[in-house]
Every structure is written in C-alpha cells, then in structure tokens.
Image (tube, one colour):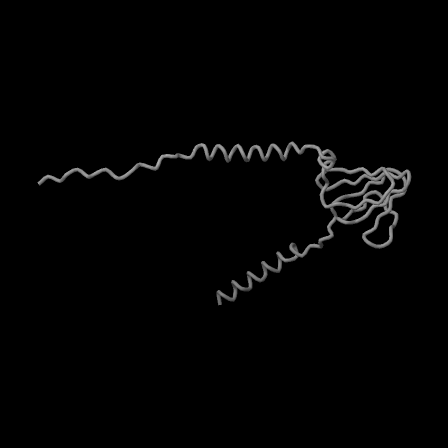
Length: 143
C-alpha cells in the first residue's frame, strides 16, 4: 500500500509541476510605448495599429511610419527607441546599443578576467612536491 501512496504522491507533484514547463513559447518579452505617430504591429498576419502598453513577443514586427516614434522596454529594464520609418523585429533580449554597435562589454570582460585570475591562483597554489615520501623504517624491536 505504501508504494501505491508514493506513486499517487509523485503523480500529483508531477501534475502540479507540468503546467510550469508547458508555458507558451510566445510569452511577452517587452512592452511598447508609443511616443509619436501611428505605430503598427504584426505577429505574422496583417499590421494593426497598437497603443502604449501592448505586450510584445519575440519575433513580432513593429512598423514605424513617418513621424512615428516607438520605445520598447524589455523586462530587464533595457529600452530601444525606434524613430526611423521602417519595420523592426522584436528580439528576445535587449543588447545595449554600445555592444550592438561593436563596443566593449566591460562587465563581460571583467567576469572573464576574474575567472582567469581565480584559475591562475588555484594553479599557482598547487603543491608540486611529490608528497611525504616513503614511510620511515620502524625502529628495531629489542628482546
């Protein structure tokens, strides 16, 4: 009977956890703010006019008309402004403009340098001696 109860408990836990893994892959990654002019969006069909506050999903397209300005705010706080007329695809992540333009990612460089430094310190502190050597001879036993 204990095995059956364990099986039921495991099934109940799995059923409770599964909805978390079955989330829609089209979750919103950003929010739109319309700063000026008409802004239109499409998830693959026709473009439709959208307003401030619209959740945006990865792959969604924004159309900015002449005089239009849209700001996309990602969940991590990063923002992108689109002020030139055109169609833009919403990416999953917001990459800061300096990095996207070929700038230096100083945070990433610092993390890599720190990792190299820690690795070098570990290697430098390893003992190169072969160990304590053979055990000493026991003293002679006198009778």
